[in-house]
Length: 388
Ligand SMILES: Cc1ncc(COP(=O)(O)O)c(C=O)c1O
Image 1: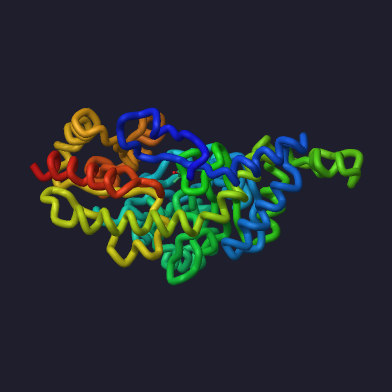
Image 2: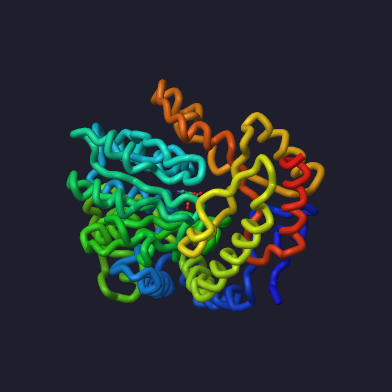
């Protein structure tokens, strides 16, 4: 039995996402709170070691967001003023914004197409210039971007590949975990993510130098942390660079560690629900499923995206789903280059496939304890509104 009332209990609608914590999660957090040590310390080290083992990488460095992990990964890749990083525009803004934090320029590449919103390797290759410093790939909705091909392109040009794995813990390509294909994999522990702790992130890498940079920059580039001084390992510190406060804390690490033990089960349930959605929605006129049936096995199934044949009907359908059927939806994503701040900075960018995707996509509810009855309601609502 779930031990907490969840946000879904307080809304009549079927939410896009809902989080259920178990008693063991609450116990884990309470135990840490009772120790009185709240900033990064032994629980964070335990969480990092467990996540690294789970992923199969050498180093996992916990930070307070995926945005922070991306920022640090780009800095470790040497991105600075005048440098370009090739990124998708079909993503959350952070993938590109973290390039701007470094003083670099995000160069947007288009996506594969209507059925796969991953960054298109051919467009990436076409956009490489002498100023390119890194390539960034997002595993959209939990489905693998073609990081095998992207890695080949990156390697051929001596560029690091940075993976934004915010959606895709435990997802794979050719049996290899996402987040281990590039120089660094950046994960999100944000509230609505698969392994959520509220706010948090992880930078994962096999490269000891990148891990050292991340460990240093997450805490003001100090040569020792509060825990090391508290435990008498040193009495002082130096500041050896321009760092940040990107630290996670012990309660969040305890929650992450507790929830990590159920991650595979949660993802298995998400896959079952995704397969069921695909069966039930396959023949709805005007609606298309994304990716393939087989790709569900590789995906972490973070969200359930669908697309409409007619972009002109999207807003009206979303309103009807919410107001007539109590079904919350979202759009993954408005294209980053079309946001005001980006249009003003980088006018005139044209990414036809991304722009179309941003107008035809609807994300429908998906979370591990979504019931079949709720799922049937979502499907019936889509049949009534899209298939009408
Ligand atoms: C693809 C992608 N990248 C980065 C982020 C940023 O994650 P965080 O909120 O942990 O900084 C998100 C979060 O929504 C995301 O979806």
